[in-house]
Length: 392
Ligand code: PMP
Ligand code: GLN
Image (cartoon, rainbow, N blue to C red; front, side, top):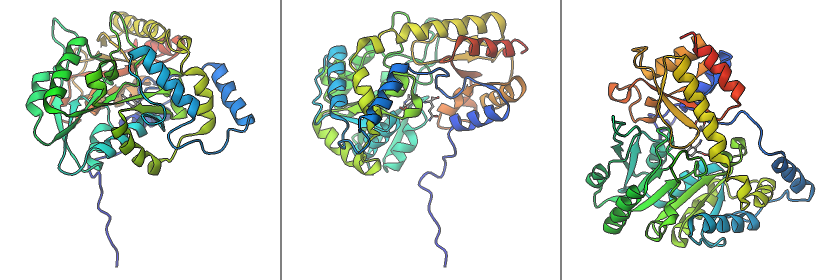
């Protein structure tokens, strides 16, 4: 007798980032698709990992994280956003922001609950809510207009989507893929929603140190009323150019963190010790993150100018993250996935279709002639990519 396995995620395939990176390798393309830096982290950080290993930090740390790292995270958050989280009970070091998101979502919602997700959205949110057994309720962002050149959350639409079953809203600022950064006015709206309906927030803030122009990162924990309802998530991968280390954290009020830790302990138990020891020396030192925005702004401006001058791709302005969107709609009628596929195979530059961040990537309503490019690259990589795109 054979038994059949019922898929928990019947509509999920391999992530777009893996698909496009694989295609990129096969075509020897320049990969501006998947978001990762093509340069090394600070050598000092690598030396600190080596030193930690030599000093004997090679066994399990505490379940929630290495003590000095938890303390450092707590002090940093207090310094930057004014909220005090207890390192003992309110912060957990996780296997990347990915595990922080998955553990939080699994812990905080379940069957019968609804969770609001803002579309376009980072790919993990929807399947994580489904795995938790909750129902995703998708609210579309308003697209850019002639007077406002970025996507925005329409809070009236969010209010309309709330029901007595709504438990959570998942937010992301700076936003991947649109680059939108939440403003004070957004937090005002959110505060009134949270006060009225009592829903909780999962706030994905992995690009907290990468914001451009006059934009400022407004953490969910910068306002007491929001902090009391939020899980705030970040990633050392983005801040220290170490996406492959897979290390991040979440911070939340104790009653939420108690539940999150129950999932975390059985998903991964804890996270690599020498990495945590090394990061504990960096985390609370402003010189390790305060120039990150200007560092990336230069790359963002460079790529946007070059695309504008030398290619038919029209870059959108980027408010934060290490991405920018560009429109090809004056140039080609292909849908976004086909355009990205063609760009990789024919011009050997890999990008990500924006439609991949929608519930129905192939639908006409999810295809607007837009691609996402990652500028977290050496200038010579960006130069070579633009050179190849000149032939468009
Ligand atoms: N959230 C967003 C918005 C991201 O862009 C990413 C990955 N780039 C993650 C979460 C996952 O972060 P990590 O690599 O630390 O798991
Ligand atoms: N977050 C990265 C991006 O948006 C990719 C991470 C991954 O491949 N899972 O490109």
